[in-house]
Length: 204
Ligand SMILES: Cc1cn([C@H]2C[C@H](O)[C@@H](COP(=O)(O)OP(=O)(O)O[C@H]3O[C@@H](C)C(=O)[C@@H](O)[C@H]3O)O2)c(=O)[nH]c1=O
Image (cartoon, rainbow, N blue to C red; front, top):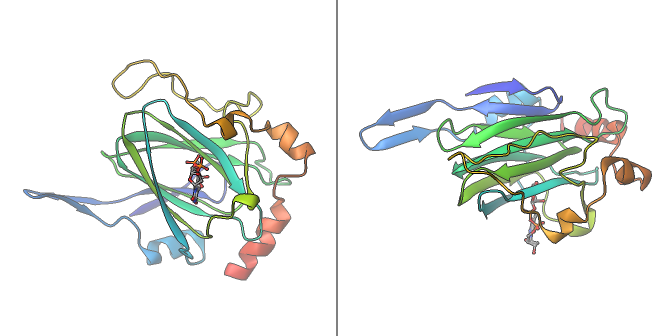
């Protein structure tokens, strides 16, 4: 299992080793030891989520108030999604930067996003099934969104599905009404790098 830190510090791409045999395949989807070696603290599993998305469905950009925030370890069990992390931590040297990892049922990678980072994904195939472990339970009043098509962030979402057909982004009503990064900053919704650092210090 290989961890590679993304260009947004605190986010990692995880590539598992797959063992194929006549029955199919086997892989370790998460190991505490590799996680702790790469991230520096244990993963505090409080909730596991699953969503199924048609091609073109765009979910996010979502984040939670820090503390405690909500770190996520995300995998795509069926289909394919472009999974994106956005640095929303005010005061971070990489504030506003995004990075992405293709999660699919071929390479079976995972992505980990630390507290304070924004999360979004675009489904590239019908029935894309995304499973993610969360470090905190659902608290709707502490969850926020930034519009995933915000031009200032400029995420380069694919225009075509895995089969080459054109994609039209389909957003929830809530996500379609979400503020831009600039508006969210003005409203004081964004987490600060300091609050994330203080919280993570309690986890080490
Ligand atoms: C996230 C969540 C939603 N729900 C409910 C609320 C709502 O009726 C329904 C769908 O919720 P949403 O529209 O927020 O689902 P969705 O847009 O898929 O939200 C998810 O997006 C990705 C990008 C994330 O990072 C997740 O943390 C989560 O925010 O499920 C829960 O009961 N528990 C939960 O933990």
